[in-house]
Length: 71
Image 1 (cartoon, helix red, strand yellow):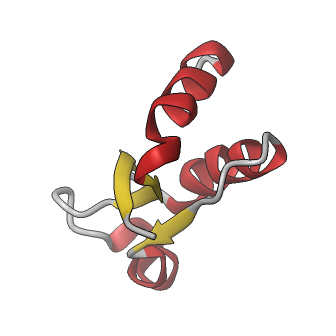
Image 2: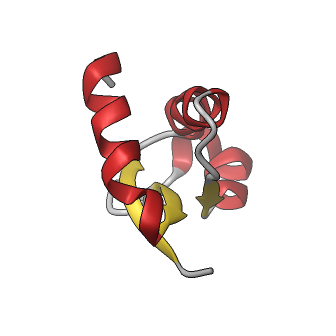
């Protein structure tokens, strides 16, 4: 199964909230780069991000769900 990037977030909390929502809708989600974001908290370089990834075949549905949820 190939995962692709869905969306990036500037902090872990927002990424985790979106991931939890998607999981509640049956979408498989991976959070990438979460360790650095959590460990460094407010000290993360502005160019860095926490990225949500989903299986390629679930990308369109995940995008639609986040859009409808207003995230």
